[in-house]
Amino acid sequence: MDDAVEYLMAGDPAIRWQVMADLTDAAPEEVTAERARVAIDGWGARLLDAQAEDGLWDGGVYRPGWADESRPFFDAWTATHFSLQQLVDFGVDPAHPRMREAIRRVRENVRWDHAGERYFAGETEPCINGVLLSIGAYVGEPVDPVVDTILGGRLADGGWNCWAEEGARVSSFHSTICVLEGLRDWEQATGGTDAARDARHAGEEYLLERRLLVRRSTGAVIDPRFAMTSYPVRWFYDVLRGLEHLRRAGRRDPRCADAVELVRGKRGADGLWRLENTHEGPTLFGMAGEREGFPSRWVTLRALRVLRWWDAG
Image 1 (tube, rainbow, N blue to C red):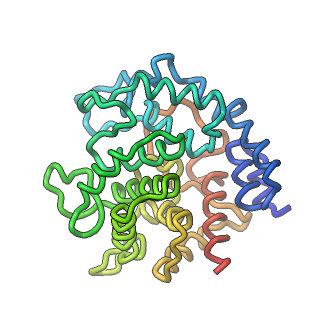
Image 2: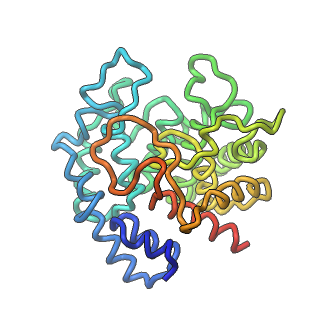
């Protein structure tokens, strides 16, 4: 077994089942058996355990119940929205009874602070709605009205920006990647629509015209953080997240080449990738071995998937 794969297989079930499915081509029944463990063992089980009877994690929808609302840029990752995003990343089987019960609680009880909308009806910000689309598609909840909201918020340059309501007219990589992932997942789950596909392709063009991280005008990196590996990604963009989206969307483009080589060049002599940028904020629990500046199973898994896709031609 490759040393990197061996390192990954020593991790949590949420990591192992994805390694088996995406890197080792294990038999489907073996993958299914390992995936079934995510809801009952390790990080997935621990996150499911943290949900309250009212459907909420940490007493809030986007921000925890204890957050100071006078701090508009305060980030915490303990509330319901980001907990559901993490469960999807873990790959908890949506048909597992524990996951079904968690989603029932959310569907029946959780409302957005914005205007009391039901959780799966969405909110107004494209970054929030993009993540919600991915969640809804994953667990089989109908979220078609959220797609209409997203399509109505696309900017003239092809992407999205959560500050559009305040007058922003240039797209944000952060908002755009959240939307692209959501449209992709919804499309793959439902078949999608021509309008949604066109919007996704236009948003991908916005990123590809900038080679996933540089300014069109100067070729300079737009934000140093875009070139740094991170996990969990939350609402933040980075080049590995952009490549992961294109891999999953099946869109191979020569304008990705520089980004791919940037990721490849980050591989250490030990065959692993390090976590370079932690998006700070309170979490419900830490994931063992995931520390900034040290080898990361999540980053290594995602990088190896991208390279396997790209190198396969």
